Length: 250
Image (cartoon, rainbow, N blue to C red; front, side):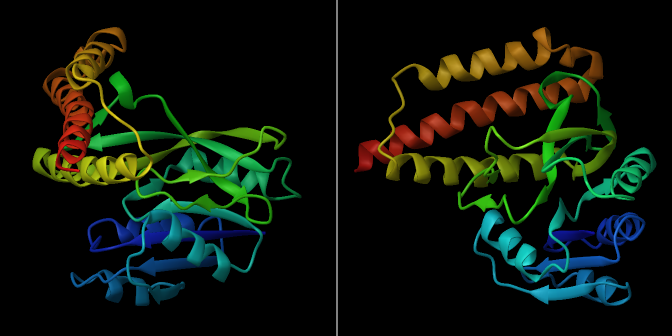
């Protein structure tokens, strides 16, 4: 009744744990690999899953490709650095022991940053719809931050438990993703005809840090709470700075 679709690239440290957890809720697991060369492919072959290579066309495109290969209509969509908690596994099993009662399911994520679980700030709570009926819902083709096409008429239900997101093993890995995502944001915004005001990059960065670190209690996560708030502010600053620079060049 439930298929799982995983997109991956060079995730040897987490892909095995990701698949092992998924095997507890689904017998149909599809891994879409965009070109791993670190042993990820070999780990996948050692598991009872279906493995496919697809060159990278973006998050949404690769995820939709995997959805089309699924046996079941309900899709559990997850990345290879995300692992279902025991509580979430129980919740999914209970929900799908009979006919599903919703069109989509909202799941809470908790992020591991440099070995520390981030419990406050802008990253917690972090709810995402990750189980859905593919007959009704698909990933919209965006360059940054893929979005599901959820209509207001669809029934969405929250599940208990969490996805354990082992996102950034080092501070530099977070900074590298910020550079990539802000480039994509600027390119997409330029194509859409958007503009960034003269002071928007500074105001947005300042508000983001204040919101993450003070209002949302990021300081309770100690040093890494500060780093996450600072890096999130940097993301806000860079995306508008790069958009302004691209506008100036054009």
